[in-house]
Every structure is written in C-alpha cells, then in structure tokens.
Length: 157
Image 1 (tube, one colour):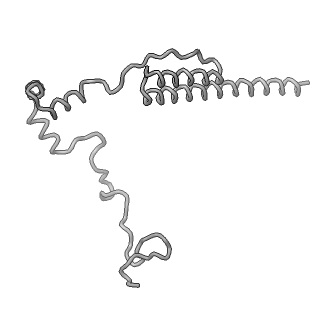
Image 2 (tube, rainbow, N blue to C red):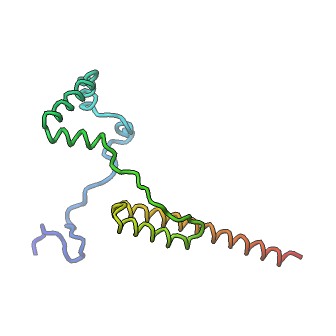
Image 3 (cartoon, helix red, strand yellow):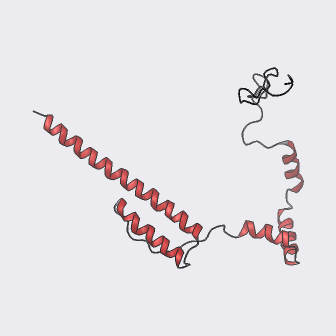
C-alpha cells in the first residue's frame, strides 16, 4: 500500500499524513466580510447600467415572446402565472382529531374523481394532519389540566 493513498482501514477515506483543510471564517480577525444583504460590485454596476431601462426591456421581452421566441414566452409565463391554483373541495368540519378520517376520505374522493390533482390532495392531507395533531394536543392538554386540578382538589385539606 502506498503512503499517498487514503487510509482505508479506518473507513474515513482521509490520508492521515495530509492535514484537512481548515474550515470556518475565510477572513482575517476583525474583518467580518461584506454585510449580509449587500450586493457585490458586478451587481451594482449592472444595476447602474440598466437603471431606467426596465420598461423598455419588458416591452422587448413581450415583443420577442409574441414573435414566437419560445424561451422568452416560457420565461415570462413562469414569472407572471401563479404556480398554484386555488382548490375548492368540501371538507367536513373538524372539531375532534377523529374527524380527520372523514376529511382525508373527502380528499381521496376528490383526487379519485379528478376534482383535484394528487399533489393538491397531498398538500391538503398534510394540512388536515397538522390540524388534527393540533386538536389532539389541545385535547390532551385540556385533559391533563383537568386531572391536575382534580389532584390538587383531593390533596387540599
């Protein structure tokens, strides 16, 4: 076995003779780097050159899209059209965590009937699950508070 090859006996895959690269702050002490949210010089120069031209660029982009530039059309539509649509599905009222079963059944029926997509159904199911969990926690806390009050009442003289 050559000494230049990684040490495979410990499973780490690191060469014990070569120290690992030091990670952490890439700046000298006292120099924290650029402030969070600040822009680099190239971005500032580009913004200065384009200042006041935004409307003309958008008009040109629309003109190119109308002329048949598919990439420009896709670019504009990706930024204009909403990514998600509003979903309308009748869900039963959820007052107890057990009601989540009926709500999930309604979601599954909506997906099966083509009223909503499977992705939309999964998102709704996640909401129902979270809401059922919140109801369950609330019910458990209420029961625990009641039990603690009853215990205090029994211990009181």
